[in-house]
Length: 477
Image (cartoon, rainbow, N blue to C red):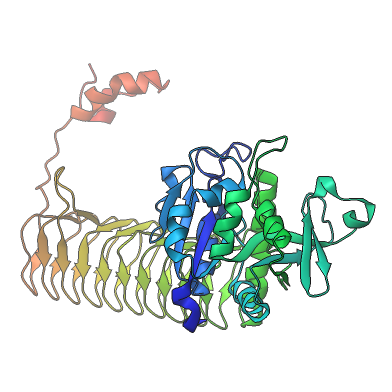
């Protein structure tokens, strides 16, 4: 493939609206296993080294998913042929090569299919090679009519006779074209049909009518043609993607207690001996080390996790976690965090854009934001890093072996030195030297009877008994 890469290009048709999907934006941005359908297709094309990519779209919302691709606009949706016509400016400078055309809402196209079809395309010297699939229920798809090892025609479902309707080999909507042959065929496509649209299958028919060679590559992947126009079809794609992911990870030595509620994205890597508990969801480019236990009820997105970790009923996004880390339950690790080896993070802890050093313990009910915490530190219950002053986020530094007492407030920017100690209830607004104790409590004094007067109406409202005044340290009236 590498020798051909400079002569190859790819056009992805992604201009479909999301009306039938009841989506607010472009249909190709609907997600399968947490990943936009368009990204599935782009990644498959890039894995196949097909050269430069062009996405034909009708909305600006596809730009983020199509990063690195040239975008051509299709202002009026007049069929697949018209969509490719909108990419003429992309194709004409590349007329000497070959063009792959893919559907942006058919996420299961894969590298083996794309490369296998190109090999056949080159071997047979085809002007066009259609990628086909064999399915049990071909209704709704164009049927492949073969003549020996050549493609004779694609017959649309509505035009099939009884014999053709029984054919189970269908057009996937993906093609390899000699680019010049494609450009010439586009000049001859007409829209004299009930829909008034230009169909790319007509370009195939024109190429065949010219006596140029057409071929057909049957994909081993039975789902290569599947797309989605409705929520029910999108659900089916999700079910297929998830079942495929679980089967792949089972083969690689991953354990599943059961598959209930488990969702695993296509780019997730799981080490051997991992256990995935129910209701665990893994999205994006997660890379999980060997022997981890994830869940139940854990959500990870774009995270790197070392070996032997336990992440129970917690969420983590765009962060890196070391080995032998224990997290949860009910922990939220937000983007930009780095958790070193052997850290313990207990229930109801939130960590944001912070680094936590090796062996540190953050037991419960604590918020750490924009901080750099050393090794073997201990955070008591209820600690808060006050990182935002209403205008700026500021950083806090905690040295090695520091002990942060319960209900400590660390007012950023502030530094706590190595082996320093903050007493419970302290608000730290100045740097604490190494080895020092920070004690910042307000001296307590009791005002007799003040609360009794304050609470009298509240007690009466709640139907409280008429307590004697002395019970409240003074006269209620």
